[in-house]
Image (cartoon, rainbow, N blue to C red; front, side):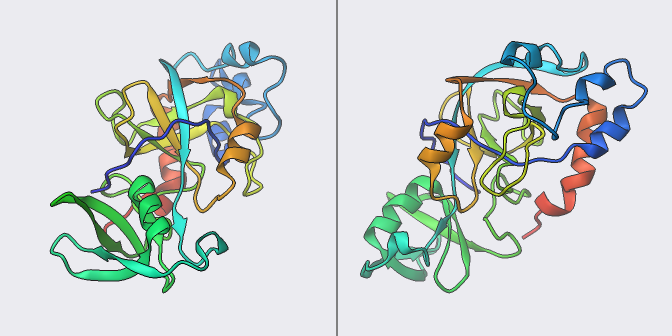
Length: 248
């Protein structure tokens, strides 16, 4: 449903891990989680890489970027004449928007309009991006069935990482994101992009300070990414299911 365009930058996210800790108590590698979600990665990055639980599968080092949902009511888009129509697949006009806003929407893929409606890119028809109005998804929709969650959703190449996979990125554990949360390092592969198999994008909600966020949060050009084991994945999916599930 959502054609995510990729743009390289660097990244950011949001956190919670206490339930995972409860699940893992009693396992030999439970101590590896003692610092997650509470403090920044202790010691140097290599030491945190060594604390990844044995059951987590290393997927590789990924180039990373950030993307967002546009907010048409933001001062960023003030003063624009609304001369560009957003159309549905069938050609019905959803709303007129400004030219700059429209160009950026073609890149980002989704937006909240002035009237509060949320639109998602549905595809390209006749050389023009066409859109779908979505409900019950305040930031828009990633892959079909998944709401976008700020600093929790990541976009991936689904040929490289299966949609729905729970991912763990040690380098982002303990990082405080713009929404004030301290991240636990866990993400959901709930969106797609066409940036290549070894890239991922982190969804930043309405964050307009992407460059500043990137410089604060990303200390390396590539992020080492792991697939969480079945136990940790089950806990995280239960915890966030009501937030990310979307049925239209």
